[in-house]
Amino acid sequence: MKVLLVEDMAAVRDALAAVLRAQGWRVATAGTGVDAVAAVGDAVDPPDLVLLDLGLPDLDGVEVCRQLRSAQSSSVVVMLTARQDEMDVVVGLEAGADDYLTKPFRSTELLARIRAHLRRGPTMSALSDTLLTGDLQIDTAARRCTLHGTAIPLRTKEFDLLARLASEPGVAVSREALMADVWDAHWTGSTKTLDVHVATLRRRLATAAEQNPGSRPPTIVTLRGFGYRLDDPAGR
Image (tube, rainbow, N blue to C red):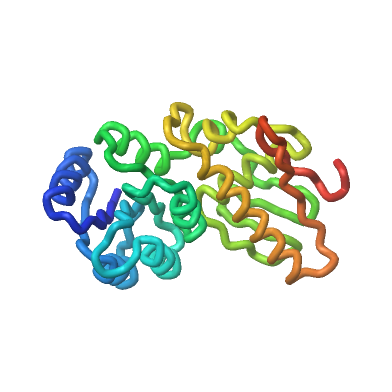
């Protein structure tokens, strides 16, 4: 696995890089946002995961995240932030980050979070090769999602989340079950990432529906205090 570590403080960067390399991972580092964007945009071998400090000296970390997403959609992006404000976290997640860790954090917590993002749990692996809900078709083997033939671009966890919901259309799925199945059974972080991923999926489905008038996309229903449900447009 290849990790890009973006951190402007040399001492912190070196310490974290040593922890990551001790796991057998390949680690590239960047001390500025400009260097990070260049490293991803020019990479023949893009990183599997980017650890992105939001407090960079040249570019705001959220803007760096947007540019990284534009350059490479498949990499997992985990924000490292000392910002405590909830809105900062939400903005970062909406900019394309998959998750965040609030400083200070323990190295064991960081490693557990990384492993959670880079593996697919047994529930995800056991899904049917093709899932159909209304005009939405999900090919889990090819990791391709289409609405009435129109491809819907999805990041890794967005795809896994939609596939998990589509595996049981009409069934209420708890937040705990979604976090366990899509992220990790021993998830210890915030579940805010789940809500942001759902909001993003709704926007992507709506955009695909606008491109295909008359198509029948499913609806992701919020069940307050419990979780979410994917409703078939035909009511099945």
